[in-house]
Length: 296
Image 1 (cartoon, one colour):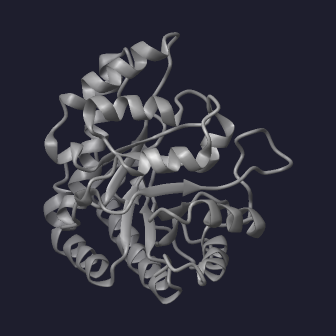
Image 2: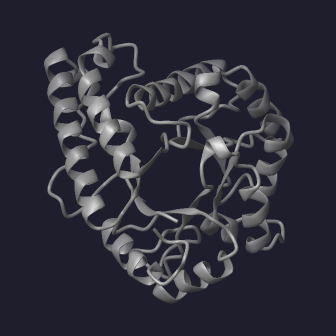
């Protein structure tokens, strides 16, 4: 069991997702931003390893505008050696990597242009992980998408688009239940047709389900992961008591996390903490999980 956090280390003093306005695009700005982003990513990974945090979600902004038509600079070739070095560090130290493109990635959109742009963005993510020589346990997670007045039709469109994707992308993708539209059971239906693994979001399940028990869904979704996919990834958070339903907590609730570890104990999982203060909660979660025999 590895525990991690997404994208930003709030205390390290740099950002691996530095970007700029589209109208300011230039090759010089592109090279400078990516160089800074990769330097910060290296610092974050080294810091994480020092603090026993061996699961990390890389920001999609590591290469600004990579899938946009304006980006004609050969970033893959230019940064190939640097990315391979980072990938080697990740592989040699047993860190696990994931990515989670933004909400505008909608494979089940009725709009063909939206689908095409979504595929281009996902292919960028897959190319980045491939250049780093990371194996198929490094995943790209996405949601089913929109309902558009007919959830069943939305599921069918997702399946249809997924089946046409490049296998190099398919091997990276996992689908996640969300807090308003598609449940873990909906994701299981998609898995039955496509074989795509399901990343179970525990917090989203508490917000949106049809009566299924969380421990049962953890078991069922875990079975969707093949050996080549690695240990099942899950997202964990809990409700912010002063905000709308679905708002993530600012800092980990130790008692709730202990309860989660207890009910998840029969299952091997890697845990991504979607909690606002990022590495601070990850460190506390690791201290709590030290006595769990699954933790490494």
